[in-house]
Image (cartoon, rainbow, N blue to C red):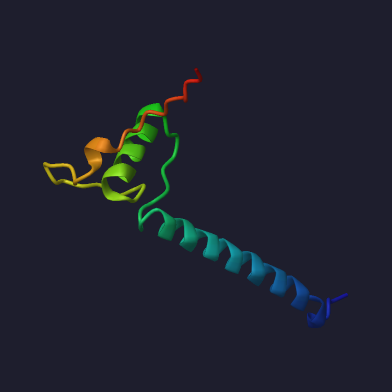
Length: 86
């Protein structure tokens, strides 16, 4: 017994919505990473270098080949210190 095509329309809509959502999330992740592929299995060194790159360039995945750091970078300390109470 054949299935009427009207019964397949909701499945097509659901499939289209899943495809649009996946494409939108992929595009957003690509935009968020500056057009680069997402990084996988990051260790502490990678995170530290990404934080340094963010402080140097203002962008998490940005990298700079300038031999000198920008002005103000010497005051940009990545170490988090706790406030001492007296």
